[in-house]
Amino acid sequence: MPIKQYLMVATACCWALLAANSGCAKPEDQPTADTPPAPLAIPPMRKETQRSQQLAKHLQTTDKETQVIWLGSGKEEFLGLYRPDSSGRPLANIVILHDNLQHPDWPGIIRQLRLKLSSTGWNTLSIALPDYLPKPAKEKTDSPVPDPQSEELDTEATEPPDMMPSAMPDDSKGAIKETPLMDTKVEYESEKVPAIMNERIILAISFIKEKSPLPVVVLCHGLSATLIAKQAQTMLVKDISGLVIIDPVEVTALKGFDSKLDAMDLRIPVLDIAPEFNPRTAPALRKKNAARLQHKGYRQQVIHGADQDFSNTEAALIKTVRGWGEKLFRNAL
Image 1: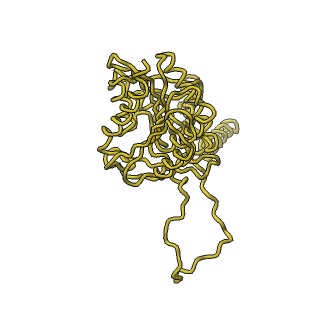
Image 2: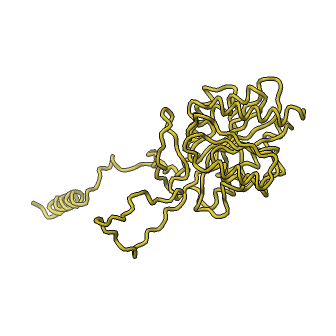
Image 3: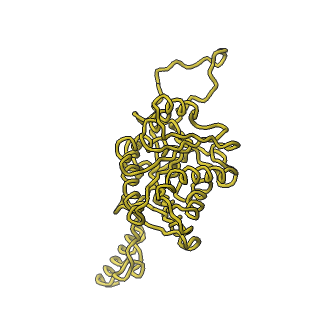
């Protein structure tokens, strides 16, 4: 074989061997200018925002009487559900605040309040609130290991209440669910939640006042009742004409919040609603403190037969709010 031809064959063999060993793709497999770029990764989103977007999409097709609005701007934008009075005799505006880890149309009392009150003289605005996710308590590594044979072994749960800041009722049974694990990198820091909540309420009050100049009431349930009762003492009291708190919870991880005292020290009308069975805090102590502080505008109503989620007693709760509002605002019109 001529040397030139031999070199050509050898060179071809070398290239073939190199391609096989390196896993080189065939020319037709190589990316070209027409190949679309890989899709960009979707940035993580807060659970609250995900719930709000899903809810907004659902209501836009199923509830034409509710106005789906977005308040705030940018990453701080949040959902609001506005429903004007349909009775023709409006008496007040009401901003409705759901419990922790829920949404503005949460099944049960939140949904019933925003729908039923809007047909009996109220302009209702239910808004989304930030999720409160307290940091887990640090475990003590130097604690002695308890003796399983000891008669004094404490078998009760020792997890602080703030590990489960509020109940998540099952839509059908009202069962208590544990707080789900979340990507805390995109969620709000627990210490910032009260301030963020306060900012949202101020925006909500401004929005509903533009819709109607009537008095504004803030109604809050569970965790929001505890946090807003404190905020109202300094930042909200000048903007609202009444406060409704429903079954507030204890928040030990945040300093300065006292469910037994905060709302009782307000100088605006306060309606305190509690379930008869298993309230999350003591209604009797709140009533006692209100009397001690001579809060003449304070009224407490225990809903007989109600449990923590007020299942099957929503009508009685709504009737209580309506009656309180009628006495407070109807004569002032």
